[in-house]
Image: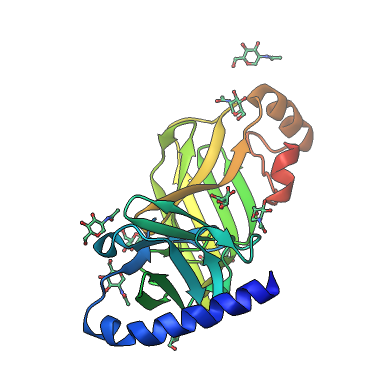
Length: 250
Ligand SMILES: *[C@@H]1O[C@H](CO)[C@@H](O)[C@H](O)[C@H]1NC(C)=O
Ligand SMILES: *[C@@H]1O[C@H](CO)[C@@H](O)[C@H](O)[C@H]1NC(C)=O
Ligand SMILES: *[C@@H]1O[C@H](CO)[C@@H](O)[C@H](O)[C@H]1NC(C)=O
Ligand SMILES: *[C@@H]1O[C@H](CO)[C@@H](O)[C@H](O)[C@H]1NC(C)=O
Ligand SMILES: *[C@@H]1O[C@H](CO)[C@@H](O)[C@H](O)[C@H]1NC(C)=O
Ligand SMILES: *[C@@H]1O[C@H](CO)[C@@H](O)[C@H](O)[C@H]1NC(C)=O
Ligand SMILES: *[C@@H]1O[C@H](CO)[C@@H](O)[C@H](O)[C@H]1NC(C)=O
Ligand SMILES: *[C@@H]1O[C@H](CO)[C@@H](O)[C@H](O)[C@H]1NC(C)=O
Ligand SMILES: *[C@@H]1O[C@H](CO)[C@@H](O)[C@H](O)[C@H]1NC(C)=O
């Protein structure tokens, strides 16, 4: 495999030298990202359109390293790809910071196209790596305090009760570090009536193209809670404190 690859790289270098003159005039082939938004940590697929030179077999390179040749991956844990209509795809799996801001080249026949895979913040999303959630439910009022680590962009969240969206006020305090945001969201909502045996969820929009549920809470039967409240002498008041991890125990 090693010698095969060295030989292959030599051949590719020669082809690239020969094709340099061509590519500088016009790009007969080109690659682009296929799915938006790009979700950090998940797969990103690039598509090399080779229709202008016929659907030739394609080679993909990351900088000067051949990573995929005619559907054969040299790093199968990281890259896969296949021939599709009009060209060939490269899937970069479980993306990390080192997969971006770096050039990828697709080659087909004597043509090649290279470009840097950038993080375009218009299309880029990072689901928070860590969430810590404190729910406070007082009769008709719901307060949710959410600590988020490593998120992009700062999401807009609302509380849903079963499937109804409540009017929500969001206060936030965030700082950015290495492209990701860290900070706290305080979300406040009200309902018309006291809530019993309902499912509360916090649904967040990350930009305009991606939505995710980041917290859920199942409220108890009110009778049970009232009995407990009476014992503790706090009519109708109960405070539920949970972390993201402990949500699973409710
Ligand atoms: C990422 O790509 C691999 C290989 O094609 C696939 O098995 C996996 O399901 C993909 N993951 C996601 C989250 O789509
Ligand atoms: C490939 O490029 C050609 C010419 O630009 C275009 O007509 C065709 O639709 C593209 N194919 C795909 C799958 O995007
Ligand atoms: C990619 O991430 C998914 C989900 O986190 C994981 O199940 C999978 O094993 C990872 N794949 C590779 C090749 O690391
Ligand atoms: C990508 O490179 C540009 C220019 O070199 C730099 O400003 C930017 O911070 C880099 N982004 C990442 C995520 O490394
Ligand atoms: C990011 O994407 C938007 C929308 O497609 C585009 O207008 C903008 O030029 C892109 N930014 C960069 C730096 O490529
Ligand atoms: C969120 O609420 C907590 C507790 O009430 C408060 O200490 C914090 O300053 C609030 N943060 C924001 C961003 O409003
Ligand atoms: C709340 O969610 C749980 C599990 O998702 C479901 O079993 C239950 O029926 C839901 N309760 C209500 C009141 O919708
Ligand atoms: C959140 O909503 C505000 C106001 O509607 C908007 O300016 C902002 O772009 C939104 N942010 C996201 C991440 O959707
Ligand atoms: C709980 O309240 C419901 C009405 O909300 C009532 O039908 C039920 O009998 C009560 N259960 C107990 C154990 O008090």
